[in-house]
Length: 558
Image 1: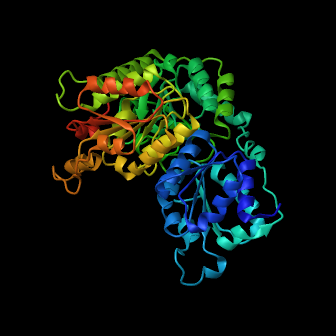
Image 2: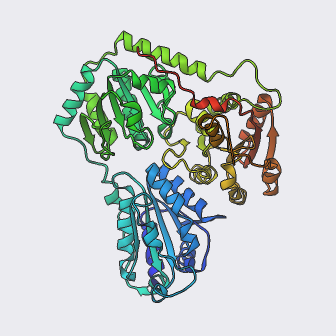
């Protein structure tokens, strides 16, 4: 059967297990869409904005560890991918982006939708690999190299720009199957000397702490971490992106999250430690200049060497498969006892964490205190522990990131890197496609939600099992309270008009409710979880306490 370059790309994607392509149609994307139409193995998800398609691909990459695939047309279609690809690269999520381009003969002439896309994308803060493809017969090879680049080392986004004549030209080549090779990339482990060095430092420490980062957030690493903690008793903190690696049985070792404003009990625990064991820590999640001002000893167990500076020079680095290296450390430790003094510090900080997230005795009657919302969401998640929680950016993200617990890896999604607004609903769509039997709880503020609210049409079209909660305070509040703190109580450009989000959702055919009390929120969540159809809950929020999210008292030196 005759096939063209577009067929060759799709054949290669199929042979390597790609299940979804996210796209918004355009003229230069036509050959790829027609190639997809010939095959039934890949599901084509049509969206309402290319940026959201990029976020959806990132969501696939985050949850599976394999590149999510997004396709766009040329010009503005491809340019709309800059933000999601930069977000994916910063957060460490693999994404394969493919754009149709004008024919090669038109690339150097005035022609519609003809910017130098590969030139725009060829920046290390946006992608790990960006290339304009020149030959049809090379397409399968180029897909293989782009795919491997996206996951090798610190994962990120890759971009292929393909002129129309390259996509349409006939070829006798067949797609390449390289996923078996890719699966071998994480088989490396450190040598015995490095393991011995790490073990000796751990045994000598009086106040060790584990910081779990995003690159360790998978099932294998979670099992290894749990075995290590069970044997050593060392306390653990998580970055926002790494949430979910510890189950209920490790509550005595868990001291919550760290990062962002460096003012949580977990941050105070790190402040008091004498040895920090970083597991897959992407420093964009928790930059060392915040937590290592006193030259602590550091053991770094990771897949890559992260950015080195005067505050981050690990004493021992174990590179390779995080789960396997940690398992070797655990097997090599014969005795390890946490001192009673350090146990007491852990206990005190756990009590402080509990106090910080306690719902106040008095709250506003016609609006929800943020901690009331956290409490309601926690109870529904505890009753349905398979819930995937997805957060957009904003003040609500800090409340949930600081205090909401989940107990499964890759079931708590947020952006630490670019802290991009608009990721929430697209990621929720990805999660619902991957996990159709599980409830997806998507959280957004009335500011961030509107960045991608049009994808409610996608949610309705595919009838996805998503509960979208919207925190409504009529402000870009994350910016507002920081303006007030930084500019003597002044603020500017942060107020936004109220929209009837309930009515908006209903216009898409999605059942929705507006709530102002905790009792109403609890009832709405219960009803939403009783169905697999999408639901929207508009929550009127009292945001007066948000300004205190940045409060920081001097840490106690234990």
